[in-house]
Amino acid sequence: MSIARWNLKEALHQYIVVWVTYFILADMGKLLTKVDGWYRRRLRMVIWKQWKRIKTRLAILIKLGINKSKAWEWANSRKGYWHLANSFILTRTITIERLKQAGFVFLSDEYLEVRLKT
Image (cartoon, rainbow, N blue to C red; front, side, top):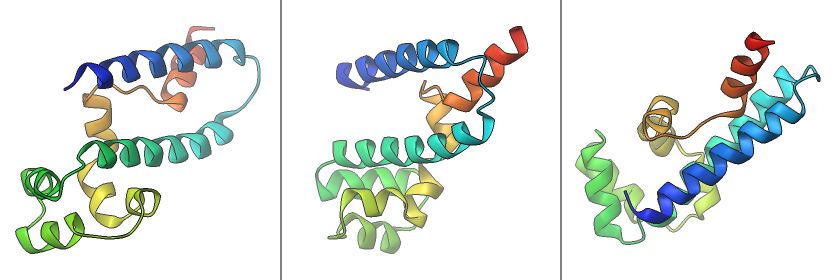
């Protein structure tokens, strides 16, 4: 992982913790699930953008378990970043578990954690 990604993760983590702590008294479980969906899609878009070259996208998609022909098809896609972030391929490869494993924090998880403490 590059240094920029670590800075992004840390900045997002700090922002989420402060934001959820500030609004802890509000009952916003449903809102946070909607915002988390958008947030995950945005993370997928940023990750897809960082892969820049077709060869990089192809290699990573194959490494993540997509067969070679489908990976080639999606790596060469002309569709926009935002559209591809919600595609079947990226939602299947960049899953919630993988994002959590990479160190990203989600609003709903942080909300539940803080809510249980109070």
